[in-house]
Image (cartoon, rainbow, N blue to C red; front, side, top):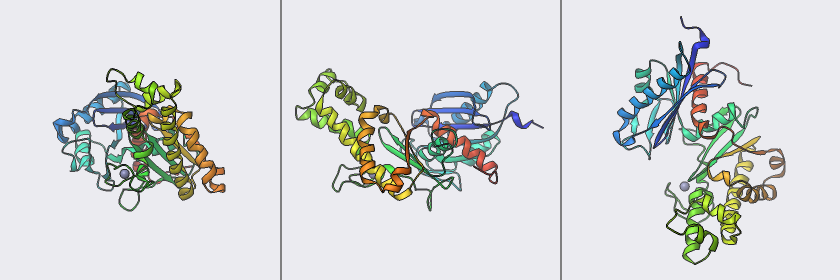
Length: 329
Ligand SMILES: [Zn+2]
């Protein structure tokens, strides 16, 4: 029989372009890793085969004699958690109602647990990252979109049928920009990197943002990072665009604090790396508009696990699924 210390948890973050697999010990230590392209155009069966190969490669990197206890898989889209089925994945062609947990479990010979990527990242930051020790955590990732996840009362909160935690789709502005979800004026359309870039392009179209115009000369892509760079070099229009995105982000924080009264809000994602210029106006909103007892309690902290949050969270969810009665802080 395999000694228990040799058993590892497989952790996979499945993205539209790449697969990240980790071999994780029970305490969250990462002992092996593998990255490879998703090649999503080849369809679910080929991608699942590639995931299985990637997990096994990560386990091999962890050293000889290691076996898989279970695998957690974070996927970019809504899932049916109970059945282990990917309902839909906008970035993965052909992924509709794919029974991923069963198919992958057959390939790997161990239990497989699925989770939506933002939920998995929230769980990862709670168990191993910036939310450790808290009971109520709101996780927000601000990048090209805005994703979210909720750990409430020490448990991942999935809602009635798995759709909870879509924090980026908080409706903020009536008749605002159209969102991918079909609604208008969602937080994601006002405070994400995509929103910052869109407003910057509008500003350039009106001959504003002169420093940004110079940086963007030669058809350089307008990104939130470039807008930030222009703002740092004194572009007042660029600065106002980021400040405004920050205030909208703050409106979101006010809502989350008033509704959930969390111990911690963890903010991750590429656009959040803009840092103080985005976050200070957000915190100013929080500190003037949220309920006092809730805002005085909450800590707003940067995420700690970077692009490993989803995979690590999925591994910890797989571990929790194997040992559901194990007490958690
Ligand atoms: Zn939306």
